[in-house]
Length: 235
Image 1 (cartoon, rainbow, N blue to C red):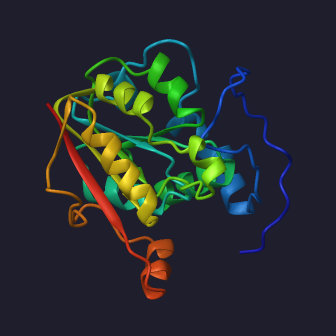
Image 2 (image 1 turned 60 degrees about the horizontal axis):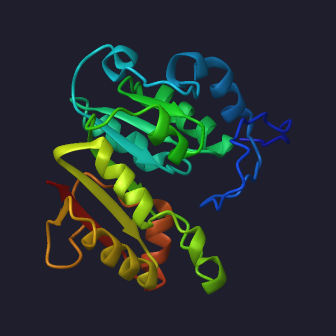
C-alpha cells in the first residue's frame, strides 16, 4: 500500500505539567489507516469525557470487560478480541497511526467486541472507568525508557498500579509483558508490593495462550532477547 503524509492530527491532551510515560509523536498515517478512521471512528471510538462510561451501554451487552493500555499498532489486540468474542475489550492508545491500523483490522476481521479511546490512560482511569468494573488489564511491551534518567517515565509505577487495582474487580487480573529484563524486575517488585495483588506464579509466568506473539516479539526472539510475562490476580 502506498503511504502518504497525513495532516497533523488534532489530539486533546491534558495541560498539567506532569511526567508522562509517552511522547506525542504523530508518525505517518497511511491511506488505509486514514480511511479506516474516517469510516469507523464513530462506531468504535469513544471520546474522552470527564464522566464514567457505561460499559454495558457502549458494547450493547453486559459481559466481562478487559482494558488494554498502549496497544501500539493493534495486531495483538485484534487477535485477542477475535479469539475471545465472549468478552469486551477496551483499548487505549495515544498515537493516531495505531488507532487507524486497529480500526482497519477491526473491519477486516469483523470484530464488534472492541472499542478504542485515544487519550492519556491515567486520565481515562481517573475519570471514565468506575471502581471494580474491569475483569482484567493488559499492558504489553510498554516503553522501557531504558536510560536511567528516563526511568521515571515508565508506566508501571506504584501510583498507577494502585489506581488500576481500584478499577479491577476482585478475582480479575493484571497481565504485563516486557522484553527488557531490568524493567521486568522493576515490574515484579512493584506489583508484589501492591497489597491487593497476588502473583499467579513464583516470579514470572509462561506466556498465556491468549497473548499472541507479535511481529516485534518474533524479531526480538530471533535476536536472542528474553520475554517476561507477569500475571497477577486482584484479591
